[in-house]
Amino acid sequence: MENYKIPDNLAVSEEGFLFLPATGESFTLNEIGKIVIGLLKNGSSIEEIIERLTEEFDVDEHTAEKDVNDFLTQLKNFRLVEEI
Amino acid sequence: MSKKVYERPVIIKQHSGLMNKFGSSPVQPTITEIDGVAVNNLVEEYGSPLFVFSEKQIRENQRKMLRIFKTRYPKVQFAWSYKTNYLSAVCSVFHQEGSWAEVVSEYEYQRARKLGVSGANIIFNGPDKSDSALETAVKEKAKIHIDHFDELYQLLEITEKLDLKANVAIRVNMDVGIYPKWDRFGFNYENGEAAHAIKRIMTSKTLNLVGLHTHIGTYIMATEPYRLAVLKLVELAKMVHAQYETVLEYIDVGGGLPSKNTLKGQYLDAEQLLPSYEQYADAITSPLFDLNLPPDELPTLFLETGRALIDDAGYLISTVLGNKRLSNGKRAIIIDAGVNYLFTSHWFNHKIVPAQNSGNFTENAAVYGPLCMNIDCLREDIVLPTQKKGDRLIILFVGAYSVTQWMQFITTRPKITMVMEDKTVEVIREDEDLEYIISPERVPEKLTSFSLK
Image (cartoon, rainbow over all chains, first blue to last red; front, top):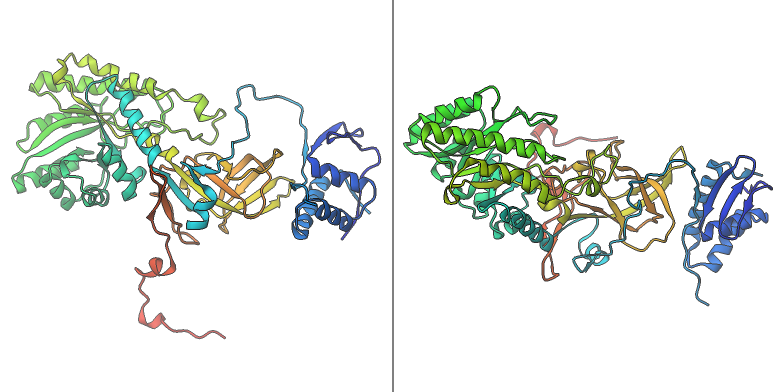
């Protein structure tokens, strides 16, 4: 699985509000989206993110993997991640 | 330690710009039960996809509409429009509520007779009436609504041959200021064809003119066309009265009242945009008093209302098969019910609601059916909470023109159930299987064997 990096200047508020100063775009995240962004910012790998979700939440590994991948597709679509 | 409730991670881009100051909340409520019966239980018992009709809602709709018209005009008779939904159980509910049958083919006529509706309580409309259909209708004293001159002469020949009188009306089309003009059905008012047809009937020995009929169109979004239509029928009725000293038994205004469904391309929600049924009833009934007849001689007002009485009594429960992202990042949801079951989705933006609590985060999505055909799109854009495989979505207001226009295509058609007033559930049409579909087929002898390598 590839790993991803969030741009350094991306601002995320505690309420899940995301702001990209370079373009002025803003986004909202749900609770789990916020956790995933936080983990990506800290440099976690995709496997680590899936593991963290299945530990903390009532979700099986396959569902978490599908959903995290879908979330990354959205982030790529919004140009919020870079592949590393 | 119990784990926290999970919801799919979502990110939504915020757009600044114009807000829709008229729009209703884009988020639809969750519907977990239909008339007190849990949606999950329905699917577990009868499968998915599943059509569900509400007996209670049909009866309430019919009673409410009758009350709306009866409080404005003393003599009102509804005739259930078979083509809107001719499931036997659905028709029977309407007949129990006192509605006659309005049919537009020999097949529909036979369906009504099979249910026990007597010929005298059938209105026989439509441009296609075979000799055998007309002979039966004459013998059984149905109200035959003549569509064109060839049919008028066909009926003259049949009644003379049988030496029987037929109760007839003519269908009249007219300019009521709307587009499209439905002038392909019936005799035109403005060019004098309608008056000419009336004259020919009045001078015949075997045709008994009992009424006048019009049907100005479908999903009519204004009341004024109805008022104009009734005014023109009233003018014809006055002419009949003055020239032939005949008082007509009825004036049939047809159907065309809209339901709660929103048309594609319609900016506002139907429920915000359309006049109330009371306003339609005002427009239809008030010109009838221009006949200047004593109350006991007033004609009965016939109504062939279809979709307005059945649409919101029909539900299509479906199951999410999968999610995907389209090339532009938009979410697509694939469900197990497609346009083959829902012809109406070609012109309506059907409301689709979740049947389980799916979290507060919503996302714009396209909803596709399961057919391997590009046309199988139920909604191009709808705001829905995130859905996972196996979740249920309910398509609302699908009672009209769904189960009469549905197609057996690519797959078989599902069960249809009715939630009864006492909250029991009855299957009113079984699902189809392979044997049912192929039983009318015949394979020529030389095609019965082949060998593949």
